[in-house]
Amino acid sequence: MARPATGTITTEAAGDGTLCFRLRFSAYRKRETVRLHERRDCDCGCGGGWNERTVAVELENILARVKAGVWTPPARQAPASTGTDAGVPTFREYSSRWLQARIDGVLGAKPISVNTQKQYRWQIESHLLPFFADYRLDQIDADLCLAFKAHKLKQARELREAIEAGADLRNEHKQRVVPLSACSIRKVIDKLAAILEDAVEDRHIDHNPARAKRMRVHVPKPKRTFLEMDELAALIDAAAEQDISLTQPIAPIDLSLTAAQVAQLHAQGMGPKQIAKRLGLAKSTVSYHLAKLGLKVGRGYIGRRVIVEILGYGGPRASELCAIKIGHVRLHDPSGARFQIPDSKTETGIREVQISPDLVQTIAEHLDRLRRTGAPAGPDDYLIPNLHGNRMDYGRVEQIVREAAELASEKLAKKGLPPLPHTTPHTLRRTYISIALIAYEWDVKYVMDQVGHADSKMTLDVYAQMQQRAKRDNGAKFDRLIRGAREQAGEPADGQARINRDRFRTGNRTNEASTAAGGRSRRPRTSPKTRRFAGHSLMEPTGIEPVTSCLQSRRSPS
Figure: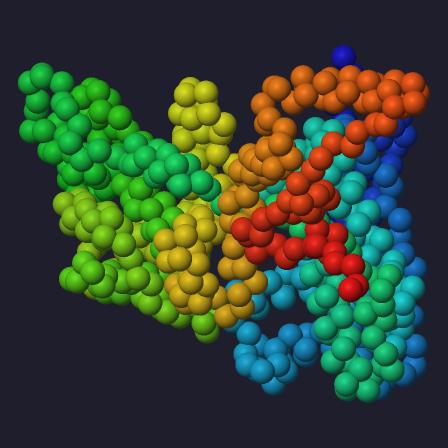
């Protein structure tokens, strides 16, 4: 068995006082060396800004690529020429000023949000600066932009190949490295184009090379669907089954005072951490008593059903659901119950959502469970809190929906039914739109107001899918039209058609024989209605499809 590949890191002092890290390792029976520099303005192509921690992670990633057989020596790019034109800033300088101007609202219609700031910083600092940092703006031409696109595509492709080959790649935070998707690469290129667009307006460059057609990246349209009504019901039932029960039976044994207190608090829906904090015990002590009582520990979160049902019955986004507080919910009037969406990614998203009586009942039961478990249940507390009573992360909402979908698929498979499609919180949003369109008699404007759409594109997209699903019986309709045509022509619609065709062929042969013997062949008599039918439709279409010209009646000029 071959010895696993190892490597060493040697630290050297550069002439400017910064550090240079030399990585030595074996790859493909050769001794390789990679140098990484501490200074951020390094022009050797390593990207700069390396430290002892990030260098150690990079060595592990290199060794993982070597083990998978996909490592290639890095190609060092030529250093960017600084030139003598001091009036044109470098991309690093200009992008920094550009980002601050967007944060302050100097550029753009309004200041960008905190989440948008994080996204812009990630795109600029993690992807654009390592490639364009020390280039002057007037040095960034079409060839350099195209080289950047090729670099990102190659980087993503090599990373996918390494992961498929079994390489375990990590970043400096020990998180798994994920290759950039085509959509992310396109967004990074769009950010480069946006920065250079403002550079054109500032007269640093004459044109924007990142707007060329060659810079486009094709992003396949994701296949988005929604659940059928029975699938939504199965998902809600699975989420309810995963909720912690507040009334679990306790084994009939003599309980100590501590064990009885633990059992009582667990029956109220508290987890081991909450019980330990309430009683002043160690968590291990609480876990011991729960195990001795035979109670299930760590089954999940008590609000799983209400999360899935609000998403499926109300259609909010996952981030909007996390921001709803108890004071935003109005349950006092069952016929007009509603909840407010105080925070949304669009201005149109700030709205009131009308909710159904069934959802009112589910939310009321959820609030009662919160009070019984001692969770914060005031007007300023979150309707869907996490285990600590704070705002839940939308990533946790996605996890709860995914776990419920997995359980629902298992149950459907036992019944011989197909599993649920890939289900996310946005799937439930589209599911609500599909059901609401039917329930509200295709009132697109009302459904748009319910889900907070300023543009009807998504609503109409779901509407189009609903139309396709409504046409599932078109095959039967087609058969009925053919059978009706045969009946109009005097031919039976069932299996007698074959017998009639045989008789028709026999009759033709008889007529031909009579004609050959000097007789006169007889043409079958057809009614005017039958002649008018030949090649034409006798009934108007029932759907919205227009009648085509080839099916319309033709009249000869009089």
